[in-house]
Length: 133
Image 1 (cartoon, helix red, strand yellow):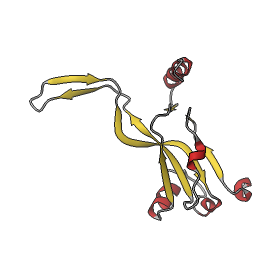
Image 2: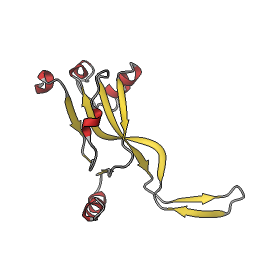
Image 3: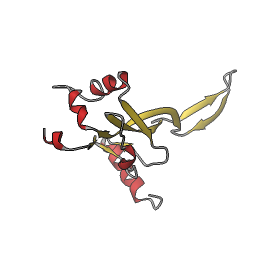
Image 4: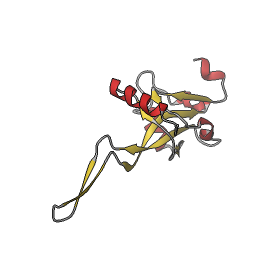
């Protein structure tokens, strides 16, 4: 493993992480730090009163949950926790969390989009050409 000799390592899964500064992830005390972004609903939601009347509609709102943005910072000790096979999210991250060795940094006002489909690519292309980015 070529990273064994490095003091630190970043990794990024296949996601668009536009305007997310990975240097914020540096940590002196944790084995790993993961980046989090707010979860945006893929659907519009309907607001309904207690008596069943529709009060309004909100198009794809930001929810009160955080998701893994796929950008990580690791110290060399992470190699002690990596599986022979498998992925970090199902093996390494839960173990580091149980041992209080994993931190998270919340990025609130960044552009982030997972790319899972052709439609996702098309939506990101439209977003990236807008002047606000």
